[in-house]
Image (cartoon, rainbow, N blue to C red; front, side, top):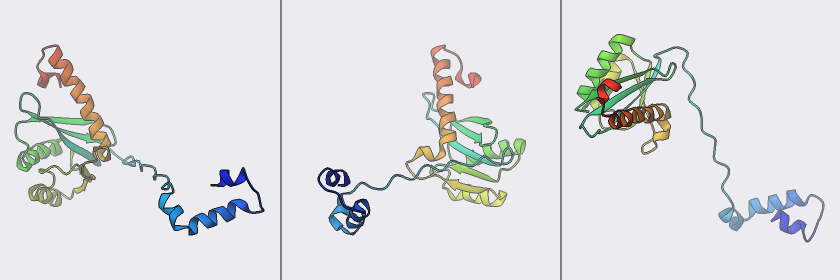
Length: 171
């Protein structure tokens, strides 16, 4: 609108008058462009290793297995476990084994998979003093670190399959 008016007319404080008129015009507000999208907020780097973790399941693989992946946000350390069952009880068994090696984290970020939103996992987190953070449903980018690591793991699996090697030993 400003550009069009400038090509025809001019008056003092023209830009301010046009902006004020647009803000008051219901029709202009209805068809105007929305404001710029707010930039994504990056996850802050934890102050020490094994403080904040991300977890996810990868699969099912052609063998029927799933890979349970845990990533440390500080060191990018990956812990993996091949699992046939993805129930909350089996997942907690794996977490207990991993936590006995590395210690308990402050928080763990997951998607909204059934095993992560179960009462069993909620109780496990409460008992161990772990803050459970859930990502936005149907938006995997919210847990980008684990998704990126899963992509790397999938590449390794494809290479193992192409070279006819045992995928478990290759991981």
